[in-house]
Amino acid sequence: EFISKYASHPHYQAPTGSNLHAKSWQTEAPLRMLLNNLNAAVAENPDELVVYGGTGQAARNVEALQKIITLLLELDEDHSLLIQSGKPVGVIRSHAQAPRVLLANSNLVPHWATWDHFNLLRSKGLMMFGQMTAGSWIYIGTQGILQGTYETFVACGKKYFNGDLSGKLVVSAGLGGMGGAQPLAATMAGAVFLGADVDASRIAKRLETRYIDKMTGDFDQAIEWVKEARQEKKAVSIGIVMDAGDLLKKLLESGITPDILTDQTSAHDPVNGYIPNELTLEQAAALRQKDPVSYQQKAIKSMARHVHFMLEHMHNGAVTFDYGNNLRAFAQMGGESHAFDFPGFTPAFIRPLFCEGKGPFRWVALSGDPEDIYTTDQALIEAFPDNKHLIDWLKMAREKVAFQGLPARICWLGLGEREKAGLIFNDLVKSGKVKAPIVIGRDHLDCGSVASPNRETEAMLDGSDAVSDWPLLNLMSNTAGGATWVSFHHGGGVGMGYSQHAGMVIVADGTKRAASCIQRVLFNDPALGIFRHHDAGYTTATEVAENFGIKI
Ligand code: NAD
Image (cartoon, rainbow, N blue to C red):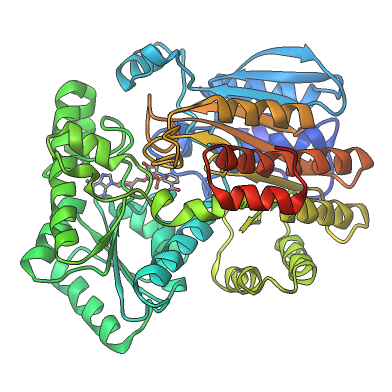
């Protein structure tokens, strides 16, 4: 009955309200979040169980998904469910403060950690690509990356444009699940945005959810809008249906140099993600089926061409950076030997935040009532009266962000702040000021949870970019601390062989048990970021550790 109401393929819907379907909120929460990940308002392609990030799935197949749901409905607090690449494989004995679900997605022994081997296993039904928050059931739609993108553009504005992005042009491509945050983040930061996507339906989705202002397939029209907005210093975002490389080439020919240039096409996957230029979507889909080897050749050549034009714009003065999709590595493979001449966004803008244990903290109202999120926003505004940046963000988010699926919020909080926020949320649930428990989680892109040498751990001071002991320690710490579900994935953001990362989600259900778990997990998790950056020689991390009396 539950499955036919909430999970009949491909119509997925998280239950809302304050009544339980599972035995406790500790199992109702993963159940609702899994279904929310697949809701049509949230997921990019629920038909294929794809949530975002190219082929990032929430469950291996429909049968596995329905079995997970059945098991979550039955699970009690003495047991935990094991998920192997999107398929439930067993229930173990545990205890009330242990995670209810333990997930491992897309992991391969390093020597075999290639897309070729992964795709072979996937074609046999043995694996699933979990991306970061798709397979770990804490995707919240495009808002999930919105503040990170906003922080990045603001940091870039401070570093290169005296903190003023008005009239400045940000150019990018890829307006999918995550990349779709770029237009809104850029206009929130005051800039003009022009972004390409080959798939018109992806841009249309951003129009519907108010992430982008305008859309066209006509280059001249787009340029007219850009010029107008730049002149009037109006923050406007424009999506153009076009190949990324083609847009950059046309801009070069027109003598227009972006002020800021980046990219968020699904470049991490050269077969099931990036669309080679000169192919229509239909031609690309057919070639991918018929001849994946030739598809990959074309994709990496296109990426080389794309990066070549980025480099030309960089030489003309555009502040250029990689936005975490591994475009540079595949462009290098495709023949662009200078691909790594521009930096990734972490060393360029984000690392100082990681050194303070800061990262994308997010929460979701399981009631489904937007008022519950507004109550949490207000509680944080009152709890952090001196944090003007945070208060401005929360106010702007309330005004500009349309919720997708269950109402959610994201903001970057650091060590100390996360624990404080978590306990406040638990009290709001306890006192009935919100109508149902609050789910607290984060991206795997965080200060102490990921090893990804072309992204989060690029250019570490001590050269320890590829050391993945850290995300494993993060996973173990969050399991020991009692998160509600934990996960360990491979390949997120940048593709097979390039990253390993851990996720955690904890449910504030208003109980004393939840308060103890929150105090441990929301301390341990950002503390791992401090340990990691202190160990690599970042003095800010050492100072933060001293201020918080952390044992290092
Ligand atoms: P997605 O699959 O939802 O969207 C990718 C988009 O790129 C699609 O709309 C597709 O049509 C478009 N595209 C592909 N090839 C193109 C081309 N040649 N020209 C123009 N458009 C093209 O993926 P997503 O969730 O938006 O993620 C985008 C990328 O960013 C992925 O590689 C992902 O791993 C990475 N990512 C980065 C971060 C970060 O923090 N920087 C976070 C999450 C994901």
